[in-house]
Length: 255
Ligand code: UDP
Ligand code: MN
Image 1 (cartoon, protein in one colour):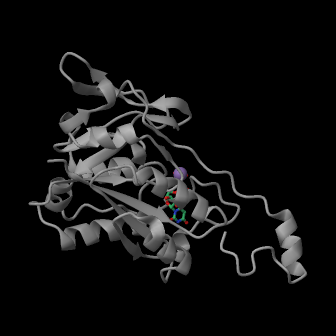
Image 2 (tube, rainbow, N blue to C red; image 1 turned 90 degrees about the vertical axis):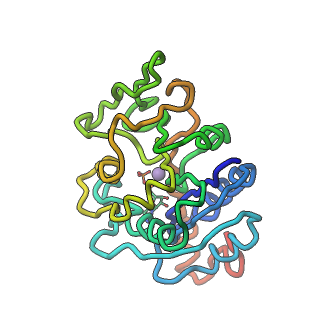
């Protein structure tokens, strides 16, 4: 029978949050055996996310863990300056390790809230024994960043990454999923704020797997089923003027 797919999604309050979560939830509703772990970057769980999940129709676990202040991106910091989602992904790993054992047939995927996911990706994940890998569109300065797969051996022989190709696993977070058994066995593997820019993926993977264990999916890594889309920050110039006048547009309306 098909494994449970745990998707771990860090999320934080901003004007586009509900739109992002809606897009994700309505993709995830189509996936059988799907379990959404949503981790808010917040001191307390918000009403917006609590109500959203309650009404979503999905099976989910709602967690929260705030990013320490020193690691939070400043308003004008470029996004590569600090690792994002570290505390939240770790919170989810901890929850999985405390609540499941290896009798649970499952796969764990780190699904950021702004990417675009094809349903085909989740079908591929069902075959993962240790770690599955696949191409990610629109990331690393390329149209597609991907493992190079030898079709005769079905082994990963390298990567096409141009950005920091010296990483042992030069992949985006969206480009792999791991069998729950591995997450449970490697119980001391965590994400770290100390990771150099762009090293989050390789550092967690180095703690859990070796390169020869990579299982190429998506037709020997020739198909793109996930895109590293990024949502433009909303422009709220007029809203800011209204706020100054004490009559913002969303009084009593959740956006
Ligand atoms: N995130 C978060 N707190 C933050 C910034 C980001 O929880 O202060 C979440 C975000 O919602 C997303 C994940 O962490 O699910 C990765 O962030 P982002 O998409 O900005 O990273 P990038 O696409 O730039 O790698
Ligand atoms: Mn993103």
